[in-house]
Image (tube, rainbow, N blue to C red):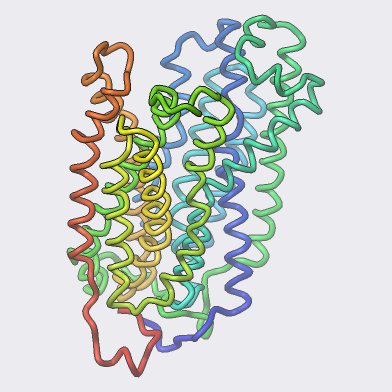
Length: 461
């Protein structure tokens, strides 16, 4: 641990945070940028060939992000967080540019998505590690919770900005090209090509933003030097170092990781099928498609409230912060108990409340807890902790799409068509038990209370 323990983060630290936070949002915009219309166009024109290939294109980024999570920790130990952020940016720029230039050529388009995925994986570990090095303990909850909303914010921006840009470039109104039948009716003609060209412009704009952020990072961002360190040492020692080995072996880390995996798995399963559930639930307002879309979008974006919970997290004593995470995991368990039920509107309202609370508390609490339990091992151990978090987040999201979908189909009256009974039974069978395990694990992450903490309030465990 560093002997220099500032009470607050320096202005330079916040500048570093702003730049890498902006980049994280931008690469997320590339991740969730408008591939669907181009894919639908290509499918209707017979270019992509099969729905399997389309599914691969959509999941390519998650796959490579999953692969890169643990190597990112090793790269950070060897070259530092700043260098890996720059590599992540290069992957994002190159991959996004390839997507823009690919048109409807599937292999090229897929290659671009895979490269962007490498950037996403590196970004998740390197940015959170560098934030932990620059931001003081008393503000880590706010900073990492704010950074943690990069996905919903990036999605929100690209979803709302893409339509007007594509319309302006192509001259086709959004209401037209938002309908897949538009591409079927105009397959291969100049009108559909103009829309695809507008989609490519969106990619080029995202790539240009990342170039600007690359320049800013090159000029202003660096790993903390002597005199700039916070509670976490920037020393990048080998994994064989006793301090690193001790932090990696501790049960707290792995219990925290299991809780994080359970959260992402359970939360993503509900998010994937939320609109299906609402439409089949029988609630009166569910017949309004536009209202269903608004409700599902708002619930999915609930994570943007996490920074407010991060402020609360920062005010809690270190040895009691585990309670914050435990209550978040309890919220996810109750979400699983009340979600996908046929009990009427009241159960849906309870589900929403617990999803918002659980989501925000865990997004605000899990990541800043990593430096607390891994700080003794310096940047090497902290990067390893965030590599675990990034890997398990992507793993949880991936498992949710496979396990819950299979279970819902198996419990439905017709396995080829998921019904509300299948969704509800599957949630009891494969979601509630996992959420319960996540909650139980939070009881084993508590930090011991030390008398020295009263003399050095900012010294990490």
